[in-house]
Length: 527
Ligand SMILES: NC(=O)c1ccc[n+]([C@@H]2O[C@H](COP(=O)([O-])OP(=O)(O)OC[C@H]3O[C@@H](n4cnc5c(N)ncnc54)[C@H](O)[C@@H]3O)[C@@H](O)[C@H]2O)c1
Ligand SMILES: [Zn+2]
Image (cartoon, rainbow, N blue to C red; front, side):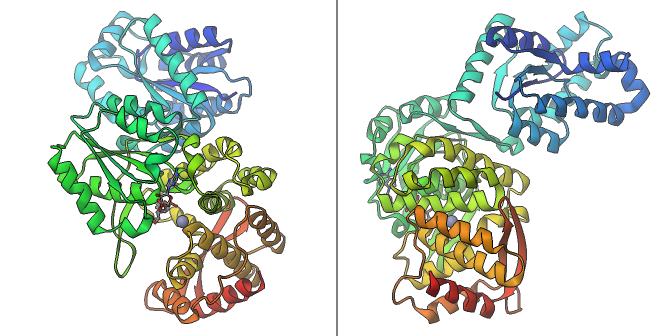
């Protein structure tokens, strides 16, 4: 069991809540401030005075890390500024359940006056100071598995927190921590879509889906019960409808339905639907909110997380787009029931990709369920997909706008995209990524940034998952070359490649497109 951390402003009631939660869940309660005081033999204000804030935070961080490593799942009350450090906060979100207690400045002041002296940053509890403290920490407090109103009776606060905690565990909640743009990815029933949309308090909501998705288990009823102002329904031709004409259909319907700045678009479908709906939302009225209920393996593991939205241009895929994070993502694995075997397997390629560059244990899990997954089984996905989502969220949190580390998600995509293009977009994207990953691993071995054993291991896994091992017949070599040359960066003749020297680790290196091409073709021919 993961530890539970309770964060929030001074005097929010964190210790009281931690004790109440511990009592009700049979866990141990711990108070970070009390632990520090006991060990140092001095009060928090005295330590603050002696060490300064930075020195105190170092001491505090060490205790927080101990709590994160605890295997008995304690409920921990944190000091108000314990997770001020971004890296520590992200570590906490990854290893624990973080609950935030939110209280307004008046409540903090009133409670602080009652217990004068024990809180270093509230010594002279003047209002301006409390307000600036709360404002400075507001974004950090939003980065939590759940935010609970701490203003009420302790009994009610504890009940709400308990409900939130069991929902986080049941729905495998992943936080995508992006300050004010923070959102959660949850695994739950599509039946709850309406309630989640209403919880955003929108002035109106418009659905976006397609005719094939609408026949997936539970989708039609969910859309009808969501109180939408209407639903834009595409034909279900995937990328063929992900263009400006598609975005225009969404804009038209939203404007027609009177969606205003407080409205929300609700995308139910695969990556093509969430990309077009997200792009339409990013641009409508200079940006309205959107939510996603992904219905393909690829969309759950990859496309729904991270806020990249785009439509295709006649000259290339995803050329017109925007970064626009969703307000929530609701994954219902049961909706995958009508997805074709081929699409299920194709989506697994992205799960393999995430495992390779960012989550070594996930690679082992994939291997242990490979045969069932290759046969299209959904059950293993209930366990695997939340891990893939968490790994992607970690990467996105580090690099929201793909200025650095996020490039690792392009593993297998340089040659993958070229193959996709050369095959005239007739193959599912995931199949091309599978081929691209084989090439990238082969190229890595030939360049000394790879491991032949890993190449063999991944090839065996992809085979068991039913993903292709060799290029489709009649792949147009000239087109492959053209697509690869288009991908080259800068004025040189090289392509930036992502390599995976060992599971869970990646390296970026420039490779001449000729070498990539030769090696790629060699791997594709031998598969
Ligand atoms: N934004 C991102 O970060 C990101 C990441 C990866 C991929 N993408 C984009 O995602 C798109 C591919 O997404 P995809 O693989 O989900 O395919 P898709 O959205 O094109 O859907 C594939 C087909 O499956 C059908 N379908 C979807 N869900 C179904 C269900 N539950 N039952 C029956 N049929 C169903 C659709 O109607 C469609 O015909 C591409 O456009 C790609 O560029 C975006
Ligand atoms: Zn991809």
